[in-house]
Amino acid sequence: MPYTLEQLSDLEDIKVLKHRYFRGIDTADWALLDGMFTDDVHVEYVGGTYKVSLQGADNMLEFLKNSFHSQAVAMHHGHSPEITFSGPDEAEGLWYLEDIFIKFNDQTHTYGTAIYRDRYVREDGRWKIASSVYHRVMEVIEPLHEGAQYTTHHLAAHGRRFEDCTDISHLITWEER
Amino acid sequence: MPYTLEQLSDLEDIKVLKHRYFRGIDTADWALLDGMFTDDVHVEYVGGTYKVSLQGADNMLEFLKNSFHSQAVAMHHGHSPEITFSGPDEAEGLWYLEDIFIKFNDQTHTYGTAIYRDRYVREDGRWKIASSVYHRVMEVIEPLHEGAQYTTHHLAAHGRRFEDCTDISHLITWEER
Amino acid sequence: MPYTLEQLSDLEDIKVLKHRYFRGIDTADWALLDGMFTDDVHVEYVGGTYKVSLQGADNMLEFLKNSFHSQAVAMHHGHSPEITFSGPDEAEGLWYLEDIFIKFNDQTHTYGTAIYRDRYVREDGRWKIASSVYHRVMEVIEPLHEGAQYTTHHLAAHGRRFEDCTDISHLITWEER
Image (cartoon, rainbow over all chains, first blue to last red):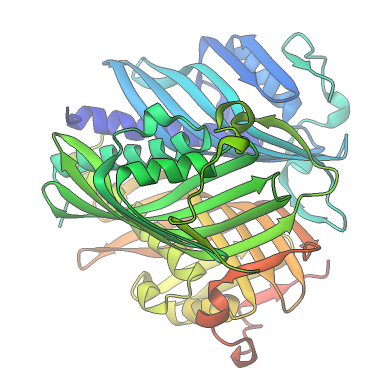
């Protein structure tokens, strides 16, 4: 069944919402991320060595601020959206992530992919992320690359200072590797 | 000339078709891939060390099942679609691929890019891939990275078991490197 | 406010413009790039070790021809567009770049990301890039990877021959690293 004009417009808005999310986390732009999630947002990220499980926008922002800290270098790109409407103000979306996550604090260079299964709702005329669940498709952890020079590192200046990170062990569990 | 509402709707459907294709191959989701190609689909993939050349949906699925096996780790992301209509039920599409393909069976980590030139047709109301041809822009083959840990590897459990792979030397030719 | 049909059509055209740009540079397709910029286009690219600053389509093309030369291997993918209209024939666009740039001439393998802030205008019915500014989010420079084989290298045959490159030191400044 063809999309209506309103649905095509909503598709663009929902895509831009997710695009802003990715730009926001990698640049630690907390003002941009504020108001992007429903108050009771549900998040579950299943990686190869970690599991994030949390509820609520406040927890989500605290989780993000602790992850995108000054000793992290991050790239998160969401590709290949497959969005379907479940109502006039509700939609579901699949995205295929590619990410790089370098942590100077534990001298690792991780890269991989994941499939997101999101749910979006429109509240007061604005699309928000109501639920976001991903499972990894591939995840590779390498030592920092020999001879690498990190010539731009945005989070060093803009991320939460590593030494100011809080304890979020109730939101994320790490597995032995 | 501006796009009509129906064309914009079709553009979304065609993009989602290709998005599903990429998700389908990397996760070995054969049910998802089933019905995505026309019966007589034409495929030609020209890499730096291989050439795939085949006709027909059955050959395509057999080629894919043999490629995305349990010793492969794969990422295929299609970017930058340029889609043009050649009729109400026909379109052509360019995509710019980025891929990673790790093969434990020959201890290689390949990454690169390619330009796809596809043709799509609508059959019984559903867009399908009628032709897909790509040429590599860059291709780099490295040995497995030293110290790498493969902490998520979806195809290990979901891809065809490597030892069950069939002979598809009539579909793909490998060159010396 | 929902997008109009004309705006949705324009969004597609603007995205395709940028998609063509990325395909054009990585494949050294100068015919494709011709006519994509306004005559007085403004460009500013701020990397970790370089700053490009130029005005005018001729300078832009000369900069590109010197950058995408026969000893370079390049991937530029623009993701996550956030496009807003500032008038019927004017728009602004954010894009989130991922790139790889290998230079055999100085034995480096650079990869990173950047945020583009573009301005587009419609001239004689065709969208063009009027301004393009990016700042790096991450940039990593590595030595060429040990054991890497470059099995497809499109620019070797299609890029400007390295020995024919001209002096563009008035357009780009390099910093010590």
